[in-house]
Every structure is written in C-alpha cells, then in structure tokens.
Amino acid sequence: GQTCYICMDGAETGEGLVRGCACRGAAGFVHLSCLVEDAQVQVEQGLEDEMEHQRPMLVPRLMRYLQCRLCHTDFYGAVAAALGWACWASYVGRLEGDNLRNIALQILGDALKHGKRHAESLDALEANLVRVREGEDYEGREGTIFYVRSQMGDCLRELGRRDECLALRRENYEAGAEAVADGVVSIKAHLTHAIEYCESLNRVDNAAAKAFMRDQDLIARVTSEFGEDHPTTHGCLHTYAFTLIGDPRRRCPDDDLAEATAIFVDIARKWRRRLGAAHPQAEMMQEGAKILQARIAFNGVLDELLAAARGD
Image (cartoon, rainbow, N blue to C red):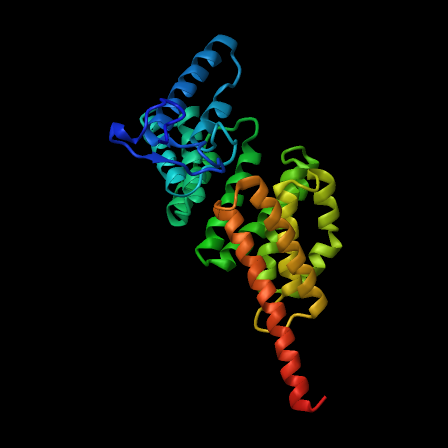
C-alpha cells in the first residue's frame, strides 16, 4: 500500500495520507503531521545556522511549509491551507517584530491563497502589509510591499472585487517602473505586475488591455526575460488570449478565437506534462481549451444556420 515518504509508515498509523502537489504515481503521499514536523526541524536548523554564520538561513527552509520537497511545486487545496495555519501556530508566540514570526505571517497568507481560502488569505495579507509599512525599515522592505500587494490583488480578483483589484494592480504597476530604476524591484517582478494589471484591465476595458499589451510589447519582453516555457510566460500568453476573446457576450472574430484556442491548447498540454493531468491548474487550462473549442464549433453551426436562413 501507500506509505508516507518521510516516516515510511502507511495509513494504518491512524492518520491518513495526503498529497497536494504535482507528484504522480506512488510518489508524494505523506502524513500532514510529518510535513509539519519536517518543516519545523528545518527551521530550527536554520536558526542554529544563522547564529553560527550570521547570515539569513530561514526563508529557504520555511519554504517547506509551501512547497513539496520532491516535485518542488507549491502545495494546493486543503494541504496548503493546513500547512499555512501550522506554520503560523508554530511561530505566532514569538515576540512582535521577530523575523521568523513576520515570515510566518506571510507564509500563512500565501498558503491560504494556494488553498483557495481567499477571504482568510486577504485578511492575513492585509495584516502583513500593515506590519511591513509600519515596522522598522530593512533591506528589501519595498520589494516585500510590492509582493504582498500582488498577492492581495489575486485574492480580490477571486472574491469578485474587480474594481479594488484593478486599482491595486494599477498602483503596483505604475509604482514599479520607478522602483525598477531605483533597484527596489526586479524587472521580472515588474513584468509580472504588468501582466496582472493587463489581466484586470481586460475585465473592464478590452480595447485598453489590447493597447497596453501591444504598446508594452509585453509578450516579447516577458519571453525574453523568463524564457518560452516559464509559467510566467504562459501566464502572459493566457492573458493575451483573453484579450483576443474580448467580451464573451459578443461574437469573437474567427481568427482571434482560433489563435486564443491554440494558445490554451498549447499551455494545457505543457501544464499537463509539468504538473500532471489531475493538478487543478492543468485541469483549469484544459477546461478552458475545451470551452473555446466548443465556441468555435458553435460559431460554425451558427454561420451555417444564418447562411441557410439567408438562402446562401
């Protein structure tokens, strides 16, 4: 039967096995308690290393609460949410302003977002943003603010608060240009914020989103910076496809619909290969491709019916 890859015991211990990552086959099954204990041990070792070497050792080790150590992808669903709360519970008792406590709060927000607990995630992220803005200055502080606002924008979008999401993403994008020049934000982060802004803009003004993507030469810049097969490049193409589709209540030009469908089909194929067909992100992209393919078929039938009605 299946066994936990950490303790090597099975479900007969009384605790069921979980898997919320991109592992496939028999790999990746684990006790949730083993994941938590493994992360705690890693963090304790990081604290010891920091004391010995006087340099940051915590963040890579804290990633055990967010990412599978086997497939190196983010946890999702109930597993992600449970690990986020476990991280916060482990370090919330530390002094206010403690670095480990601060990082744990950010991990809680990220993990809840991965678990699709968007309202709870937004609460944690907003609390973290207040902490960062009002706390002591430190190297990387401004970059952290941009990152937290980006995560908040994702939650606002999923909660249907589109106007707030657009305003926040516009703020992140417009402030990012100056931040890049000052060395506060990387060009990769700024391009990611541009994609996010364009995605939200398209929901309220398709023509403006198309113009933004064209004027910023966004696809070429993102591809050059990240590479063709990077998830961020796929996200940019995904946003571009939605600008092609435009208002779903209106007929999309056949050429644009065909191009958008080809993009969805290609990304779905790549995500199935990278994440596995059962992963939620791969399933979402595959479903999107099927919907567009059905829309093409519907347009063809509609054209035939209209032609018949006209006597063509």
